[in-house]
Amino acid sequence: MENKDSNQQTENNNIKKEQITTTNSNPNPKDFFNNIAALPPSILQWIDKNTNGFIAIWDKNGRIVYISKSVERLLGYQVTDLLGTQWFEKVSKEDVAYIKKHFDTDQESSQIFNIMIQNIHGKNIWTENLVSQIKDSNDVYYAAAVKDISDKKEAEELMIRSEKMSVAGQLAAGIAHEVRNPLTSLKGFLQLLQAGVNRKEEYYKIMIDEIEKMETITSELLFISKPLTDNKKMEIVQEMAEDVVTLLRPQAKLKNIEILFDQTDGQSVYCDRSQIKQVLINIVKNAIEAMEEPGDIQLNVLTGEDSILLDIVDEGPGIPEEIIHKLREPFFTTKQSGTGLGLMITTQILERHDGRLEILQNENKGSTFRIILPKQSKEY
Image 1 (tube, rainbow, N blue to C red):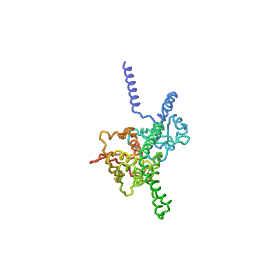
Image 2: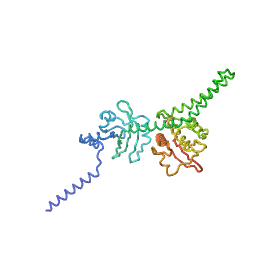
Image 3: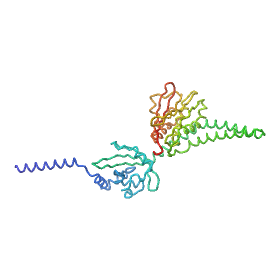
Image 4: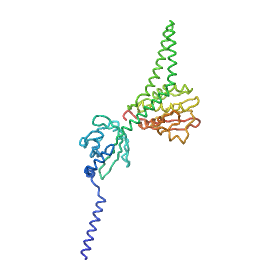
């Protein structure tokens, strides 16, 4: 009896030790990856078939140690082509630099990055990447759930083009008025020259000035219809603001509104010129439309410690506090003929530049839309 109890006690102790060992043991990550690959083919096929993307895992050296078979459907590469390669080989240098700069290794939660990955045919595919850092014993691994968002990006581009065409249509009246005046002058001077007046040189100079004025306005109007580029470099804030003022001044004149912009000290920001000009057009145009009475719209450039602030100050009725937070929502608009996309597009563009938009109430009258962009060097 005593021997039986002793054997039972020994067996119980062994079970407890086994439980403790199992609970406290850390499985080798490589075994974990092998176990994933060793799942029944039917399960792996179901995962690959029902995911719009793929899963990738790489080590601290950036070498891919596991990638799901669904990568073949999205990018065209075979799994064996990618195992052992670096995760960043199919990603542009700009996106790699962006991820390395913004990925927080101290953050335990997953982080999302929208980047383009090159497929087997050399085409760039827009993807959303949910990236996490996994620490196990002395090893560090990174896992990413990659999803194809090409359709979403195409829809965004269509919305942007729709908003751009809407802006072009609204500017048409002002542009037509501004171009008609120089045309009238040109016609009059040509008739004088035809009649044989003697002040030809003086008239030629005036006519050239009028033509250059029309060229400036029409070139800025054509800019609106072009798709957004992605070409970032150091740009002078004053030049971008002056271009936008030239374009929108005719529309402002129709409502007896003056757009004021003081000379700056030549501050520069690292940005895509066409995208930041689109932001300025959206905000200044909104300010013009919001003002029901004649007045001024002031553009001010301020320099912060690590950022450039561009304020657009209007003299409109202001924005009620209860709807300020809704202004960035798609299709929300306070205008009868508005699309509700302008500020949403503005917010997206600024996010691409690590910037933001603040909307402030003026003490006396109107609102201030503050564009904040970081100071960055050419070596970004």
